[in-house]
Image (cartoon, rainbow, N blue to C red; front, side, top):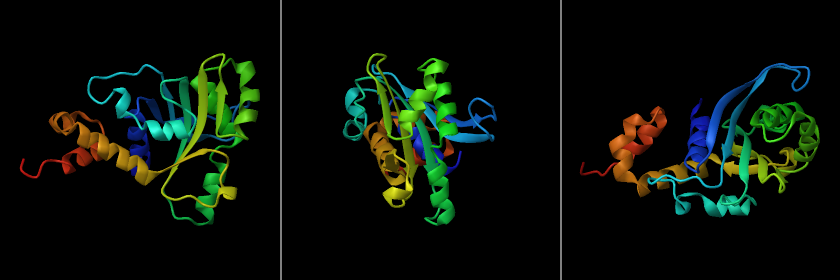
Length: 206
């Protein structure tokens, strides 16, 4: 993962999601014409709990409520794209392709909330909206774009948006909240970037 994908991964993980990174989208007649990858897929269940950093006031609740995805409600799945480039034509084109039909179809199939025969209809709805919710099943799925910068809205497919800087700010705030535990266990984190962020928040007297 690059630095942007790592920050996105830990933003989701520290909000109680189980993220899957660099998910390969194999070429397949049913779902995708050309091989590619999805930066992240993630799923979250409503009763997540950890004694350290996994309690209701630890989440980015206001943001998720603003997105219409309260974290104490449905099971939530995300198809996530992360962009860190310059705002040039190539960057805008990459964003435009981020949530194409074939990528959405592969992601929805992989998340496994619905039977295969239902996926095409769900993808049709997701192409037009940032979120699809199934109240009967108790599941919501969203398209989340995490980026350094965003082009004009007309150049972005319908999706939820989070600036990479906001993801970093949330991670740092969570580290600060549990600094004693995070400092003690920083080398147990599998990410060099997370180890550095925790180390960098150290008490200057230690």
